[in-house]
Image 1 (cartoon, rainbow, N blue to C red):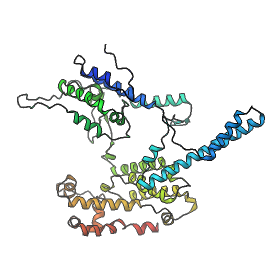
Image 2 (cartoon, rainbow, N blue to C red):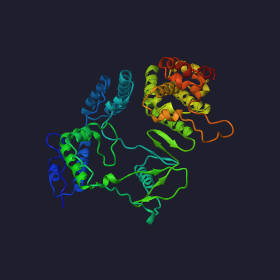
Image 3 (cartoon, rainbow, N blue to C red):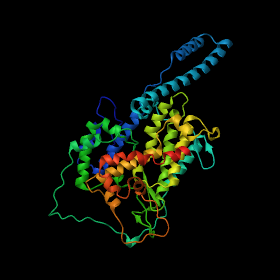
Image 4 (cartoon, helix red, strand yellow):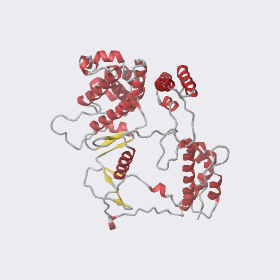
Length: 471
């Protein structure tokens, strides 16, 4: 039996000293070395998370004076009058602390929004110590706040989520793909270098959620000097022995097809069929792709909006701060991938309604107040979502037609199918129909002239503006 390394120290000593002794040993299998290293990183992650950090909230002088008075009263022998005064002071202290926290948060948000336009740095600075408990959890019918019921709901949800479907083995129809390598012609694979592993660790993005192993990128970069030689040796042994750790073999594969569905099982796991899926933030679907994409964008925009409700719903912040937050953080969520959209009149109206609803929520007005849309826009001065979509689409289409690399996007745009017939009735709206209305049927030729194409951008983006003002 191999004894796993003990709890690592965090500061001065090398936390991977004992692990390095196991890794350098040739008597241990490569997969076991990988398990030892993973356990060591998980232990270090738990130890660092348990370290205490000071609270970054600052109390005002008024609050500190109230706390001092309460200490003086508590030091005096308990009397009925003092007990009432202490209770009253405690109530005033709690209210004052809540006010100080609110002022601190708003000042921090305002500083970073004016400086950088986003709230990511502000949220990082305001992050409190430890993890918060889940205060409540909503079921299909009701909301529970009892700890045991919350635990049961979460357990039931993830049990159903990861439950295996009915498995049907394909049997003799299963194919085993093997790769035949001609040893006479193949060149030897070079070893993985220390600098390559170090560069790979440094290239990982920070402040990202860890995987099931709970190993964060910050933990890897913080111990890069000790980890680099260990991981390099493990990777080279994996490359030589062709023994892949079991953690690498887990996969999540789904199938989408417009033909007959047949059960496919790989190593006892049945692959799931889906009608649509999200790839790189956009919906991929065979039917009704654009309505699904617009619904996803609106849902994502509202999710971002409510995550920033402390700013956009605040009555203490200026509209300029709210406007910059919306244009910087929320509008990109609503218009992600808009360069390739083919919007109908109904879809355009759906996006405009979503933005107007957010504007009313930001200003505190309701529909019963009967504030006109144009007056609401004059108050908020937000960037119009439809103008932003048209602007992005116009710029990208011109860039695509001027590109000399011959990318597939341009080839698909210029492709003209000649082996099929047009269906009866009005044809579906195409991606270039809106561009044709502004630049004419020879818009591809016009797009090659950058100055001429830029002069038409404003006309294309504002072609619906007058109609929207009337409505």
